[in-house]
Length: 486
Ligand code: URA
Image (cartoon, rainbow, N blue to C red; front, top):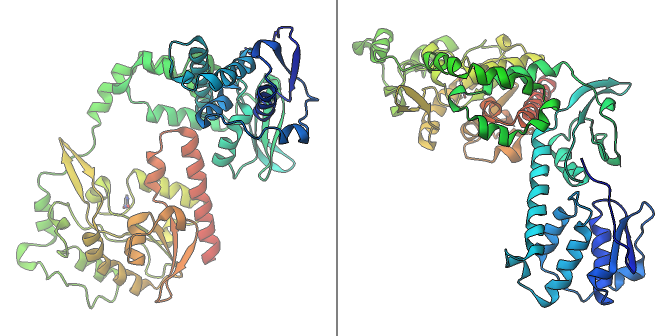
């Protein structure tokens, strides 16, 4: 709970525009310093009417303050302790004569300054991690509301972070002392609210719980560390927190189940599988496939590809899949562990994410062609596991021969490059996906290439809100693809 301010009686009273009014404090502090007003003679208070006059601003010239002090003061001023304004002014006053004051860790003012800085930064971090939006619908459509109880006055300072992260949705964060609302264009800061103003649960609740259950790794459970990171005071606003006690109590059982479900191991007999497809006396030259008139013929030739050494350790070639009449071609990086065993692209975890988002975007996977820049699984054996390893430029170049053939037979309206390796293959050089994302590039041969991320990127994001935001961006990209080729 943030305490009510108790101010000492002093000669000079300074009114600030709000509990974290750094600009007001800074302007007043500089004036006071120029006028030689001693820290003990100043009382700081908060008043809605507080204003800065232009003549006062002009008088600020001529004071130099260490930049690091100002930067950290902007954080410290958000602290709930009413003494923070006076502390900051006292440090500023002392810095004139003791320029290394903030390096003296034993000094009581330095110690308090450090502790306040740390406490506010922790609170900022916790807010970023533990704000949970709940979906609501009003006359303008969908919007999201979250309730959060910070220890300090951090709403205004943290609001730009939420604007950046959730720019595409309308949202409000309500707290007891302030609120922030983003209408999709403008940020509005307002007064505090009541817990009852925010909804309790929504449809996303079940999704959060499923997600939390799926990322919970019982083998890594450290109860103390978890409780330090996610203190109990935040639990009541976190849908997933209801699961924690039961997950802790069943962790060892879950760990045994997880070990039993260890990732697949490459079949020791994989060379035999290859031999079954292509008995040694029938293996064609690396260049097989030149005359292929259909995707089926091309795929059959690719099964014996020796254009780069990756074939040697992979189980089989994973060729593209989909109709030759497809309007859209999606190009991934390379098959993963499960694709290597199944012999089909995008059937593993990344494929599941991809399928779900395609469906949400209204794209029927069976009507599009899905393939990879590299057609063999490249991996590093680690114990019993095969860990994905990124194909190098030579491997991408070698396999481009197949991709060009696939595109030549299909002649799609649009090719979607999923991630950096696909971009490298389709556009002939390594280009930054983050810069090109969401845009279409026309190649010299007229082929239009839409650039986006690889769906496995979404899988790798740990923070649930980042994950949800990235998923929403990818869905928006897929909707754009649909509109482009419609
Ligand atoms: N990642 C890819 O790029 N392709 C697949 O087929 C599977 C995962």
